[in-house]
Length: 140
Image 1 (cartoon, one colour):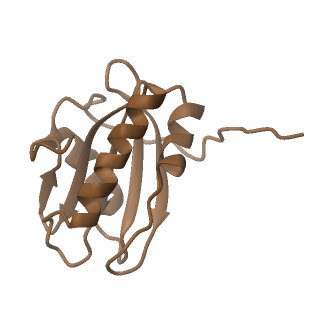
Image 2 (cartoon, helix red, strand yellow):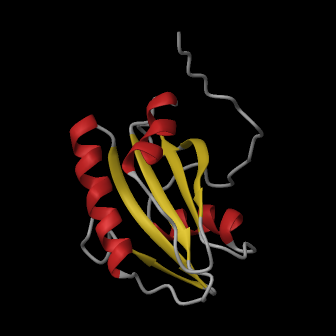
Image 3 (tube, one colour):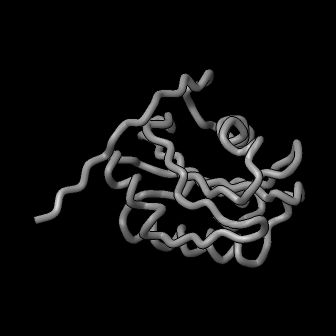
């Protein structure tokens, strides 16, 4: 017998309550990724109005790598009845330029989301006081 349960650990009052642009996504993700010393990959589950319903640290990597698989990314989205997700991670080096692996992970997440019906609205990479939106770069 197996049971899955989504447990609310804490609450965060996000000032704007809606992700309308890559800048909005950056401002939300920055709260979690600004001070970390390793690569963190975060999933933001969104409702039909692009309001966050759940935020999950999907993976904590090393100084320069993080293993990301669609199954771990979409699990919290499915459990929280998300309409879409926003993903983001930091580059501890401070350079926000996407790597080949970042682009490949984004493409896999887009494909998986299309299959299960949960859209990936953007993948944001954070550096030192800068960010890159893979949606703006044409990968989403």
